[in-house]
Amino acid sequence: MKPGRRVLVLVCAVVVASIASGPFLPPWALFLITVSIAKGLVALGLLLLIRTGLVSFGQGLYFAIGGYAAGTAAQWLGVGDAVVMVAIGVLLSAVAAAALGILLARYRTIFFAMLSLAFSMILYGLLVKSSALGSTDGFNVAPSTVAGVKAGQFGYPVFLLTVGSAAFSCVLLDAYLRSHLGRLAPAVRDNELRVEYMGASVRNIVHLNLVIAAALAGLGGGLAALTVGHVDPEMAYWTTSGEFVFITILSGTASVLAPFLGALLLELLRSLAYEHAPNTWQLIMGGAMLLVILFLPSGLWSIFERRRRIA
Amino acid sequence: MATLMAVAADAVIYASWLFIIAAGLTLVYGVMRILNMAHGSLYALGAYTAASLVGAWLRGGHAPLGSYAMLLLAALLVGIVAGPLIERGLLRFTYGKDEILLVLVTYALFLILEDAVKLVWGVESYFVTEPYGLLGNVELGPLSYPVYSGVLIGAAVVVGFALRFGLYQTKFGKLLTAVIYDRELAGTLGIDVRRMYLITFALGTTLAALAGALTAPTVSVVPGIGVEIIVLAFAVVVIGGLGSLPGAALGALIVGLVRSAAVHFLPQVELFSIYVVMALVLAFRPRGLFVFAEARKI
Image (cartoon, rainbow over all chains, first blue to last red; front, side, top):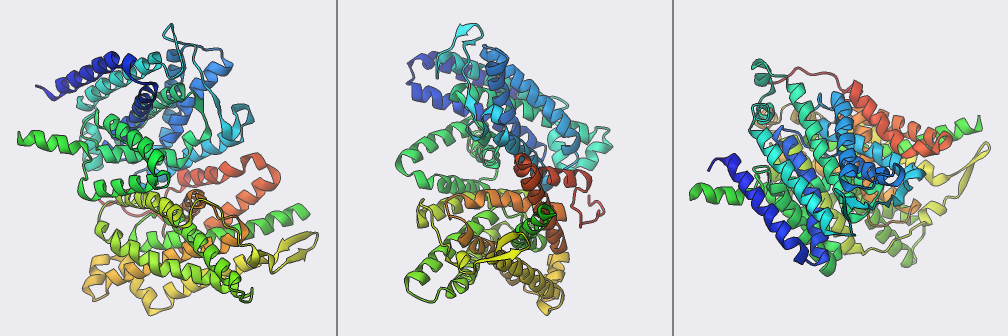
């Protein structure tokens, strides 16, 4: 089977399985899976950036923009439908990245990481001080309908919307990564000068990938806001961005499905750790990250890949 | 006039504190090319150790003046124990890898240390205000300042000059410069690069812990105090230029001035004014104010 086709089949299988099992899952599981998928979307954007050779410690910026845009649209613009709320968030995140990208696309390695971190911290500082948006407490977000269907709290409709948009993003990003333009991303990582010699513009490629990653982070932020029912400035804080980097490094960048698996694993482990040993949670995370970096540099997904190559 | 004086005084106090933190970060980056995200956790470690030591000292009924020695001891202890432990136990396996990968490694270290602190000291807060209150206040015109702030400024000046002397006027400093310029060549000349890295990292850790220890008497020591520090320190060293000592001093002064001006005139923008300055400096001088363009390497 062609690799592109395989992703499509896998995504379809996961979507059908989730739609079928959704109504029978307990609310906590439904909540956990929805939040993981939302975070997985942000990590999916980071996957694209890491393939381009960039690590952003500021994806929380777009995550927060997506969440706050969705919340603001519901609170003050009277938008009641979840689909429109999330779409506004995606659009705003992409616009923000298009503007900031003019600057960011010139930077690499740690300078890129630091500048993106600075931008997300600027938003954090703004949100903390804006009393209209609830300062440090944030505010509640509650959609009344999802694509015309009435939405309940932690409900099946939001779950379906999340699964649907994640599947759509996966297939689209996978197609992009296999396209002519998408294949330039690893080329930029390996040798920028040669990409320029080939006649492609490195800056434009980086800029485009920044916007795509931001749109995905905005989508994740909007969906997370709908699921949790709340937004607060923590979404833009650098530790939130760090968590996304963690998910991406843990899962690896070999497949567009990897980030979702990584995010699900993270959320599962987190809820387990919170129950049994609340003060060792970050310790486990850090330890796992070190083990992956030192012994499994291509991430957890590479375990599957290796087995397939042998078969 | 009084406001301007207050702004200037606050700026100098804040800048001194920032400089001690940033000096350690920039030193480690300058020599080892590691942008240490765990620097804030080492700061927290210093603060907790200081709180414990000062507490034990005072409970033992010793002279309160000795608590200042305890602050120093805490910094040294963290530097000598945690520094080599981290360098030998973890960082040495990652030398020669991408700078960005090292950022990820130290980020993982940050996560581990955050919880390690909680496991050792628990989640309750510690107060050791004695070294702070002991010195009383001093009147500067219409303003009153704690003398302890003077200790902070003094410490920053001492740290600055000691580093300057150590790096430029001693044999060790010259050897270190050789390592900075070319690690492999320095090795072939018989310089023990491993030892240089070990000492540098221990020194950087000591400075982070010193800043933490000196801060401990002025705040309540609670979990998470290091989380914000690292971003501030990044801002300072990035403004001045990574790996530059005068850059760290200048960056500390700029950030100190911006913050204290913001606090006095526009309190709403206090938090993000620092990051705005950092973003502006990066936008126009990507490598910082003190570092000049270098030829592109293919």
